[in-house]
Length: 563
Image 1 (tube, rainbow, N blue to C red):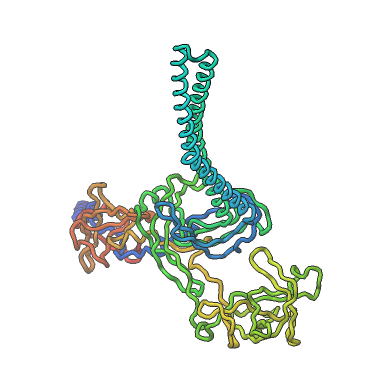
Image 2: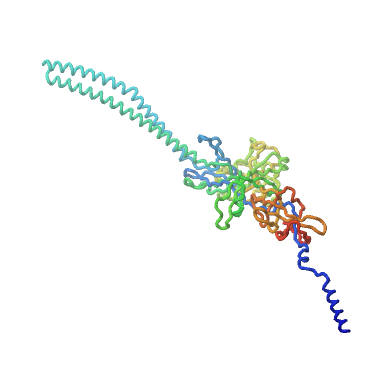
């Protein structure tokens, strides 16, 4: 009986424990998924889409003379020149800057010789015309008269001979005279034809002589060198006094405005460069300020660089000269372009005491020649960049020696009549200008040393090019991992709801193809329905394709991401 009670008790306890509810696998699957999210925000592409651009000259030309000869002079590198311009008829509209010259003596002699040939040919033509118009007609009339008389005599003699009144010898004489007169007349006619041909030849000789003169004049004009465009002398390849042959490069001229900017892009990026588009170019000025200007697409190289497999994009941009500081302009209106030492060893010609200055720096008040000495700067001083020069007059005496140097300067040997001037330490200034005009009677005590004009951009400079500026700021950038659905119907999962039970909402989107440069692993999107996505909205950033529309999720706020 006791055993029966124990068995019943055990069965009761076992059945009671089996009736308690258990957690099934389906209940566990309904727990909210943990997701990572990102917050939508506008993307600033300024920094991420900039590349370095190399500045270069758009057009560069090595220019030489079309004739051979000895170089008289040539501009120094850095000189600004203007190009020669022609109209559609080939006539010169603007002469441009002459920046090099050959010794023209041989070509001037050729012009004189050709001119003489033209004059001789013209006089020969005039003589032939006078012959045709005066002498030949007179000879022709005389020959006609002689022929007529001889013909009448021949007719009379023939009749008389037939009647037996003339002997045979008398008849033969009349016949011979008639034939002679006929031959003389034919000779005059032939001479007229010959002189007409001589006239044509003389006219041709004039044309040939004129052509020779034209060629001689052109050769003489080719002794001066001009550029076909405005630019700057980048390099000089010859020294004045050297002999060059036709076509030998004398100087390299580079175009400074417009200027080109080049940068490299990949093959895919090169196809997205807008044709004839423009990009913002940021330039760092000498004073540290930056300036943004527009660079226009000139071309994309049709072939990639075989080494880097990149394509070169060329922009063109308007260049300009940097403005000079207005502070120094208010101090003095007088300027000078050069400061000179007077003890120049390469000009002394064996005399250790000889002093020389450019002739343009010498001034005269009618009784005394003088120079302008710099008083606030000496040889060996550390340059502070201050262009203001204090000056005073010093008397001089011009000596006999004067000679050119390198074709660009003429130096005069002088004697300085001022004991305070030390040729080894002190400077003198060059020609003085006021409002751009040279002055002889300057009465001030300060001048401005003109700084060498500089272009804002020079070949070899680096600039920053915003190659993504044309894409604009429309849309939202998201990582590729946040995209769901097929290519023709993409969507994202947006977090909706507040509190402890957020859910996801399927938002159809369209992907914006990039116009220029595609950001790696990122796409720009817009919702199909306007207003479905806004700044500050959160979307699932990873594994969103496992979620269903309306599914409750658990946002892992500690792992929020931004593209």
